[in-house]
Length: 218
Image (cartoon, rainbow, N blue to C red; front, side):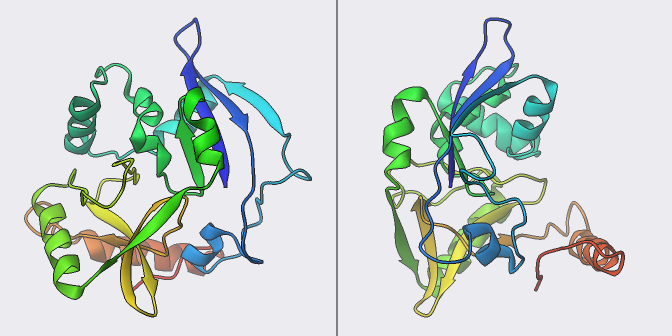
């Protein structure tokens, strides 16, 4: 798990000061468990510096890719956390940044020690709760289940409404904090994009036939 403190430089550019740490309970990373693919970009002392500073357009583009692309979702997040429309990357300094895809967490410098401590948990969902949650996301793409996560935030990139859960022998669970997810469940929107799911299936199948590594899909 990589933990980054995010702030804004004097020039207004995004600056990421990255004290990196790795927490692993087994031979695979959370991204490998989530995708079923080996991670060839492992972080660790042999691969990354213990502390590094990054800034500029490339960093801003990468950070933007961690946030939802749906304007309605971003607007809802900005209003919730009081973030100005011209500074969407500031969302990563709110609880939103503490739960991002890709085994990375962001937070203000005063949250670094708490994030490195690896606090987290799991909330078991029954089938009715999962169905209710997916229905709420279809109606409001910015919806996130409340009451289970003390931080109360998460970020999933892309346009489709979605939620990240973990599948366990006991059923579906909603992880929070440092606990990893295993599945990203996307909601189709027939009224807006009739062939949304089909297009994603074809795109991923084409990528696999071209020799690219893609996650398993259902």
